Length: 151
Image 1: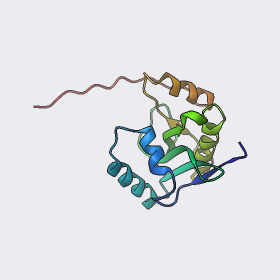
Image 2 (image 1 turned 90 degrees about the horizontal axis):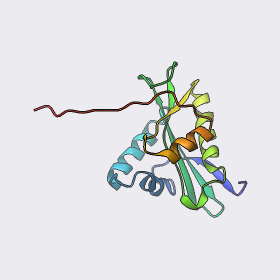
Image 3 (image 1 turned 30 degrees about the horizontal axis):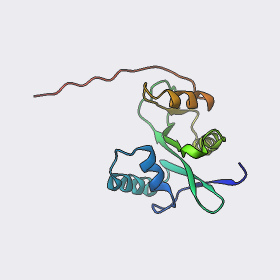
């Protein structure tokens, strides 16, 4: 993996950032992704994004992390660093790239004084759950969300 470098995104136009977000959250419109990227860049004390690049500049993976002061399920400290998103291109998986991206998020969280890094995965996303466990996360609880329309 020495042929891959991890860089923090400090510019809304960072190569690959938008494309990796679109791959991770394809249902979200590009203009929403752009607005969220700008919000992260505008508040670097609260947000960080890391992109993995191959030699030559091809973007391979993404980790986005934020600080949360509200209640984060399963945690006991505040603020908590929260892994908002983790994505590695299908062709690059099983090479340790997700671990390196999460390690960058952990290092950032440590600099921010956090004692915990939390994350969440949809119950149906079994692969995501396996990846989190392999990266050292432990499951803390399961929640079922409900909603009801208000007339």
